[in-house]
Amino acid sequence: MSYEERHSAFKRLRLRAFLWTAGLSILILLDEFIKEGYLAKLEDFLKPGTHESLLMALWIGFLAFLTWKRKKRNGNGSGSESESERRNS
Figure 1 (cartoon, one colour):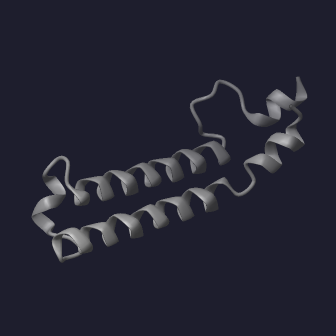
Figure 2 (cartoon, one colour):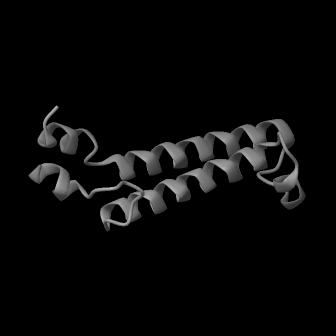
């Protein structure tokens, strides 16, 4: 697969990840409201297996993805060589 094909396939990955995260968050909050009658309880964020803990894990994962993407874009990723070094070899 060429660089152009890979680039076009992942061109809007950050936007798609945000839209999936936001969409799933809305569905989780809607399910919580229908089942429990409220959107979120602060004390439920620390209880495992609740809608709130799922929501928190979803957003922590998204923020970790953004951090990884930013580091990779700036050349500070965990790889041993940068993208430009790979293209030149």
